[in-house]
Length: 475
Image (spheres, rainbow, N blue to C red):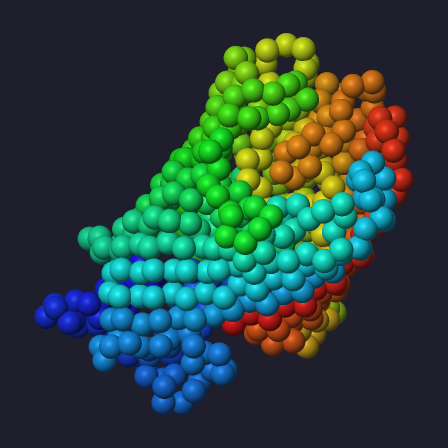
């Protein structure tokens, strides 16, 4: 059970004459303040009810006064307020290898995400509007660039305790959902307009298990204010379970089933109704010095009257060397996502990443995880005083010469016809970040993508260049 739920349920029990809430810990063992997240609703700010923070101000900044606002004497009703402000500039040269309108394009993304989180015992309501504008996008802003003013998240949930220190939460409404490492269901946080879903979710926390059952539809952003709507053509459902502490506290495993329906699906093979089922297993370890993240997925179902058979294997293994200057962390990622072998038969072999995270392979990500083999080494350096730098590379091939390549949302951007070449190209990228405080951060990136034989043989093949600059303030 999360700290937030323990406090809320304990305060409600005390108000009803049940067992009292746990005693406040000694100041020397004050609970840690939660990290700031992208979804915001999973930040447990009820820890600020601990008297040690009220009495000494331990670890507090001005904005923490807004994170826990008790509305009743017993603390069973309280309000959390917060905000994210972000400005991001991206400047492209030869975007998509000079094969799109306005390939030389620079633009500015502006985003504000205020939120309010109201807790009343086991009941909770969360609301987060979005203000997202784009300046300079040509020929016009897309749904990931601009939505003006709308509702990004708005849901209510109810939590009940389970025997053995567990919680069952029933939630309904609109919310951002990120499952696992967001290879299949992500928040699309990198672009200007994140992805949200409308529907319901049941979250069961019991012992080492956290299990999500969901039935949702993606939200489609519109070009004007208050016109975002629930998709009528796409549906996602399934069960996603995480087990923590396999052989140490940092090692865990995910097992899941995800069902997906798209009435207007399109691949190089053609268009039609897609009904796809995904079974997956993920093993991960987030601890230093060794860390890894390995995930395997198989897919089956029906597409346009034919069958689906696809798969993907994603691996990430890294090692941090704390004893060396700048604490270098070297990570190697190798991923394979199947493609379609024959566009003329009635069997679809293209892997579908469903709703993957934004900027999948880096700040510059012209291609997505469909019909691809890629090798991505990365070196991260801790420069001290909140500064960090990263250097990464990438080599990309087509997994199948019978299929083309796709962008991150899954749209075909280059056909596989007319060439048997596999090599897509080479990417290099450098990033610099400065976390000036818990709330304020800056980043810059420079990226190049040089076309390989497949790109050169199938159309325009100019080298893509991108510069990115970002400033963000979040509390």
